[in-house]
Image (cartoon, rainbow, N blue to C red; front, side, top):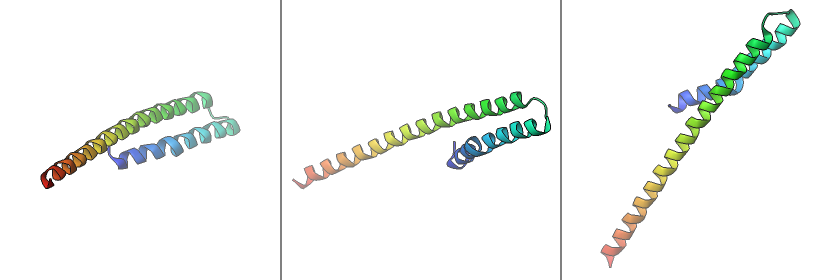
Length: 88
């Protein structure tokens, strides 16, 4: 998942979906709109699922980034060791 997609989905999960659920439940209470509990609960369930998927994606990204960093550090150390051996 690209950073742009991740950031957009994160915004939807953190701002848009909770706002929609709150807006509908509140207006349903005021204006007597139908199924406020069901609609609000559904939106929040989707939001929770999206948050879990994004958390998993973020953890995988960080793990891959850490592995990549360690590999680069190991290669740098090996290169430095080889350079020192050549100098001696």
